[in-house]
Amino acid sequence: MGGVTVAEIEVRREERLGIVTVNRPEVRNALNQSAWYALLDAFTELGDDPQVQVIILTGAGDKAFVAGADLKALKERDVAATFRADYQRIVDQVATINKPTIAAINGYALGGGLELALACDIRICCDTAKFGQTEINVGILPGAGGTQRLTRLIGLGKAKEMIFTGKIISASEAERIGLVNMVVDPNNLMETALQMAREMAQKSPLVLQLAKFVINNGVDVDMHTAQALERLGQAVVFGSADHLEGINAFLEKRKPEFKCC
Figure (cartoon, rainbow, N blue to C red):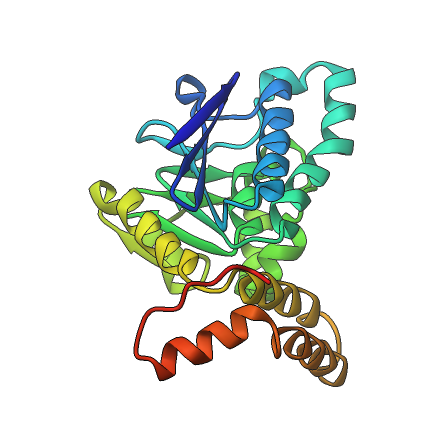
């Protein structure tokens, strides 16, 4: 296990997993300028690390995942301008990284914090978690995918309701509308996320990456184009070392040892 701490963002490696923790519990893990750049660096670093196959994002403490941007910092005009330009890029980096991502949501996920969770592939939360696209309450429009990813995930009507009212919903409501994959006891949150991540990490890294690419890029195009992407992905996989290893392991009744090539 290895680790490095960069200001308010902690990065830890465990086996084939990368674990990123937003470590500002005194402000409910709200992101200031240094934290959001450190978060970008963390995901860039883990994306480039061939030893890391799955990434978990969580918040420190038991109160919040990420409670949005640090509003005190946004009072500064130059910081606000930078935030508008850069925060979408940071969230997009999380969304487009070529590895599966799991958000372990341990409390409030509000505003930009919810946008970060939406950028992850899987969302697991504790039963005390709260969710809200709350920007409208302070005169801000969601600008890092909230108007788009939330709509695609939970549907037009529910997304408009959350964005137009800025209301905060419970974990059970989030699960009911499809915002999160599952709700667990707070004491079991990280272990549940780790267990799922370990299960994914046993699969072929090549197939994981291609599956994410095909799903993400196929969802917004017509079915014919999406299936063409699927066929291209399948063509890459067939004949790869991982494909041959998977077939041989099945025939030999053993666990496959995938190498991503």
